[in-house]
Image (cartoon, rainbow, N blue to C red; front, side, top):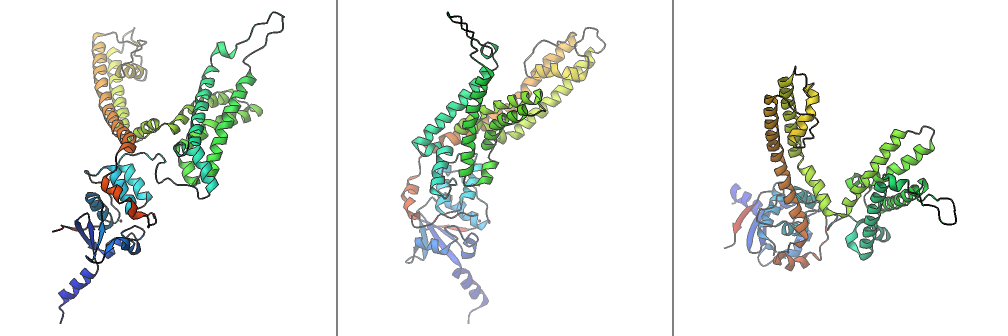
Length: 421
């Protein structure tokens, strides 16, 4: 007669799953793996491709350290952390092999400081023609034609920026040709129509490019949520708003001037084709706390030093510090080491306080900047060197193992680990 203890042990062992990863034995339960049924380990049918009946175990010739983290993902119901001794390129391959899903891969890459650059695993339109157009306009690395189109777009952006700058130079804007020997009337070379036609041609290309990518994008929500696409929209919108205002009865010179200023956003369109510029933008977001601390320290320093300088020289006839808010400008100049010289201290004590303000300001500004530079170096190295990292041999050998499997996506436990005798 079986005791309750024997019955309980039989139930536990019937639910046990033995996994052999390159000679290391891992044991877990079926209910643990079933928490994520769309993954390779969670789906019994997919997992059966790697079952070895002679040993009653599943065999994977994969990275052992990475598998510990992946198994803990099931055991902890969704917590995934890359082991320190496993490079990101290898851990990425393991995530893809065990089919944890694109969302999990994106999350772990974001936590590790990698920027999504529309590389592998990017979403593609289902329609073949739509996919071709999308790759042509949005993914320069997919073909020679796409690369050429990207070069053309960059050239148009550079020329558009150059023209908008040249338009403000009086000698070019008002340039006229002198009359020839036959006494024909002088002909104006650069007219308002010339600038308008140039602007029209540039914005026509930007508009075509934007709407082609919009209509062929596989996910309209992600398209509108993208910062780069928002920059593209901001770069072309002022031209059409200017046309509407210029044709309306309520023509506002101030509004037109502001819209002309907004055209400077064209230069940010270059970040679409430069990974380095995107890294700088991402680094600013990642260093938001450090930048906030920098602004807070600057604010405290300006308020304290301005107040002290004002009260030191208050009552003096030739003082430049007529109020605390007016002294803010001098404190900012001194702390940032600009020193225009339009405001200067006159009393010896005020000069001593200004010197202390400059020294304290230099130290205050330097501390958060060092953290920002460190973050940038880390992000730049990760994102620029990622494509050059060699894959681990054992991962390349097993790349054929997934040929029979589909590539699903989804999302998450604790395991007993014992070394094989």
